[in-house]
Length: 338
Image (cartoon, rainbow, N blue to C red; front, side, top):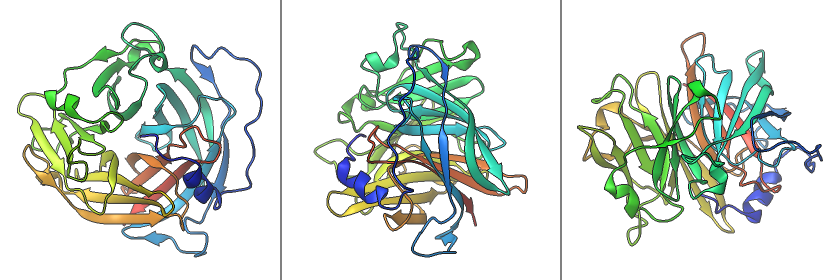
């Protein structure tokens, strides 16, 4: 949801490395896949005023990056998935573009991005997704070569087969009738495939950013799709909106949330929901793993990715949607679950 503006960027930017305007690049063909250069600025303190602090709730901060790129389509990162090694990643921008690359690590810390490329998603009619009503792409879930993307404003889910490359056209999937009752620009924000520990392994779960009016302050609606599925809800607490979901190796579900209050600031929170609770008819709730505000290195965090490291530890990687504003930042934050 693109509601964060200059105030948010100004507050977040106060914690950033020295600001630099995007560089001017040569004219390129933006209608197809292309390589991009992403400059990365590492930081080791999540809370700059608390040097040496690494523990935040039930998470340990490992490292972070601020990313900058001259390509005008880079940014707006709303969701993503990691390869099993935690290095390769595929992200979606909320303007209908794929962003792919590999994290560079040194001594267990993120230091850069390499092999980066960007490509427009293709609508069912072959046009660039950005040029269609499906352009506001938010959630992402991957199963083999299939990638599913939720479209927040049309309340749809698109299926892509990346075995055909980034030039392949999307296919519309069947969605519950309740999707279409969601408010404009407050639709399906997070999707994922239920893990093997769930009551219905492999089913797609979809969660909305906020309940539709007139109950906008109510619990966030969600659905488990397919036969045997149904509607559920996520308990709304403290006026946080939902921005992404993922699953720990244990199967338990993580919910990434955001609260933005004009003139007051921004908060980010992660809650843990037991996988045994994720069933049709449930109202999902759980303990807070971590909460942060603008005293920490955050921006509009919208993507939550999970992998296991070589020691079997659960590692979380968060990325931010800068709303394509030069006053906001594209951040990568990496934590270990304690």
